[in-house]
Length: 58
Image (cartoon, rainbow, N blue to C red; front, side):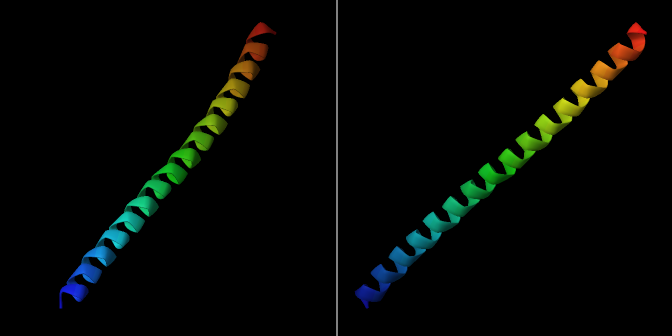
């Protein structure tokens, strides 16, 4: 009986570690996607700024 109890505890720990690892992995993936989106927005804003400055200097 004690064998099953130990096995159950070990399985719970393994499942907990796997869940935590997948959670952190998902957070890292989502943050990298957000960073890429922000970089694209910054590039577009820079382009708009340059166009407005060119238009204003005419």
